[in-house]
Amino acid sequence: MEEDVLKKAMQGDINAFQSLFAEFQPQLKSYLYRLLADRNDVDDLTHDTFIKAYTSIGTFKADSSLKTWVFRIGTHLAYDHLGKRKRWQADNQEQTTAYISASSKAREALLDVRQNSVAGAFEIREHIDFCFTCMSKSLPVENQVALILKDIYDFSVREIAMILGKTQGVVKHLLNDARKDMMQIFDNRCALIGKNGVCHQCSELNGFFNPRLDHRQELMKLELSKGSKKYNREELFALRTLLIKTIDPLKASGTELHELAMKLTREAIGEK
Image 1 (cartoon, rainbow, N blue to C red):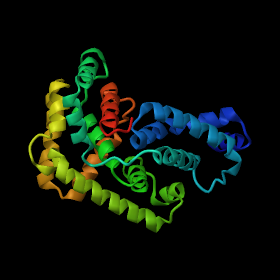
Image 2 (cartoon, one colour):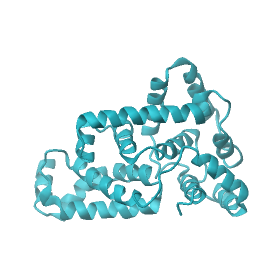
Image 3 (cartoon, rainbow, N blue to C red):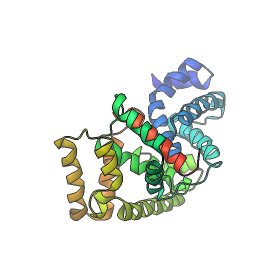
Image 4 (cartoon, rainbow, N blue to C red):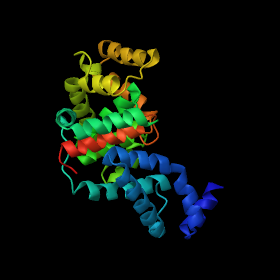
């Protein structure tokens, strides 16, 4: 049945193409969000990806899944977009904390979201996802793409090689370097990993701005802390990515706070 729909789509049937695109559109949007960290940009690039994929469907050779082919288009559009901006740094969250402390307008915006939005409070696991996105944006873009596609969206090395236009050997190197760099960042900056007490970011967002904690969330946090003693760095990183896989940052319970925090981060580093 799906083969028949794909055949119609390749013949230019927009309804057939749209039905296939809709199957992986949520994943595409959350993937682009992890790359771009801006909901408005995600909406624009998702639309552009759809248009470019549909108008180029005649070039689809079916040597990969349609999903992989579309993700390649979306990834390259994201590349063009990110090429106009500087890469984030590992200390962006510290810069954001300083920016919020110095800006009454920023603090008021956070308090307004916290008090008035039904999507204005993080769960701990959502904050872990937020930190992962910020930290991954400090990687070179190709490393970030390879890491997110493999460890969060379960693309194979072969599929990632097709998306990036690289050999599988190069992709393996990108993944190895990305994981090593991310583990190093976590070791130095995340208290759940580094055993240096409560992370100031978690303390702020899950304390003053988000007092909605329950025992289940605290137990999850405790398990990660215990994990830092029980598991090696690679196993703990894998544990973290397993948790992040369950989250769609565009539909999470604290999505409005998430987006505002990203906006303030972009302001703090001078991106917008």
